[in-house]
Structure formats: structure tokens, C-alpha cells
Length: 249
Ligand code: 13P
Image (cartoon, rainbow, N blue to C red):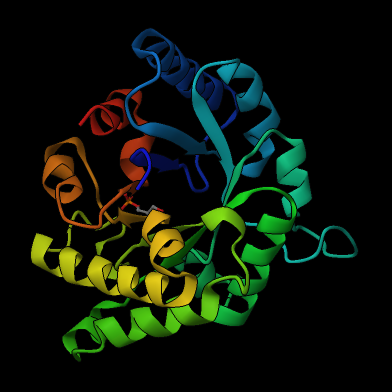
């Protein structure tokens, strides 16, 4: 695998003042640290993308969108296309986050179409999967993950330009994190599916992130799990110090 990827998903948080301050703080830290550590990515809400891109300047921090529409343009009120994200300076797009799947009824088919739109616009899609608490209790975690991965992955992945994020729904924003053994099992299963779909080399090169209440205090343990190639951080990515501590783990 390549460099570890530490991604911050700001979700629906951040106005111009707070967003710019956070981006500038992270940019200064990243510039002082230089290249060589983890690859860093922040995904602010859409209205801040251009402003945050400017605040980041040439700091080694990538920019991503939190969602995109499958179509490049058209009559889709309130949506944003992958092309627009690229135009704003993004190189990544999160698709299929459980909050989109839940709040907006997005199924695997539309997530796959979004991932393909991201690729077509030159972005790297971050495809999110993860089971609910009920599904885990019912012993269905791996089968749910498998259905989501197989149904949500783009048909063709040029140059393994893909990231998968395993985010157990019950661990998101709850302070609960999956046990390392469960994370290892889920990530191992996802790796097997990626290798089956893309072949050993490309499937092995796809980074599989863990997400769900990642914090400075648990990052080391989670990032040490086999097949965990980085983290998708929600709440803790809103504090520069916490996000930086996770990135520097
Ligand atoms: P939290 O880190 O707030 O649990 O959010 C995780 C997440 O959903 C990132 O996409």
C-alpha cells in the first residue's frame, strides 16, 4: 500500500471564519512538518471549498467533497457534481457515507454511480460501507459489508484510484469504537473482496480506511490493525490539534 491516508470529514460544520481558521492552522502544521508523513485530506462542506482551497495554499493537504451527484451537470436542485468539486480544487470525493445512505435513502446503485462520476471527473472516490448495530448483533456485519462493497464499487477502477472506508454505523459520533479484532476481520474481508475484483496488485493497493470515533487516544491502536491504511475522522477533525495528533500517529 501507499502512504497512510488521514482524512477529515467536517460534515455539516463550519462557517467561513471557523473553516478558514481550521484550514490555516492545519496548513501551517503541514508546511512545518513537510512531506513524508501520512497523506492528509480535509473534506469541508461544499460552500467552503473554494475558500478553504485558498486558505490551504500550497500546503500538502488535499481537498475533498463529501458527496457528488452521478451526473456532470443538469437540473438537480441542491446537488453538486464531481466536476464542480474538481473545479473547486478537490482531488477526492466521499460517496456512500452512512449519513447519506440514511438521511437520503442512497442505495448501493446510486453510490456506485457517484463513485464512477467521481472517477470520470478525475477524483478519487472514497466509498463508505459499514453495518448498523442491529446488523452486527444479528451476525450480519460481514455479509452487509460484502453486499455494500460489491454493489457500490465502480465497474472499472483505473490505476486503483479508489479508497474504501469501513465505518460501522454504531461507532460514528458515539464515542464507541470497534474492537481491533473486529476491525481486522472487516478490513481483511474488504481486502479479499478488492483483490477478488481488481486482482492482487490493484486490490492490494487500494487504501481501506477505518472510521468511527477515531480520536488521538485510540488512533495508534486502530491504525496498527492489519489492512487499516488510514482513518476517516469526523468529530475530531474539527479540532486542528486532535486531527494533527491523529495524522502524526
Ligand atoms: P466520528 O469520527 O465523528 O465518529 O465520524 C466518523 C465519520 O462518519 C467520518 O466520516
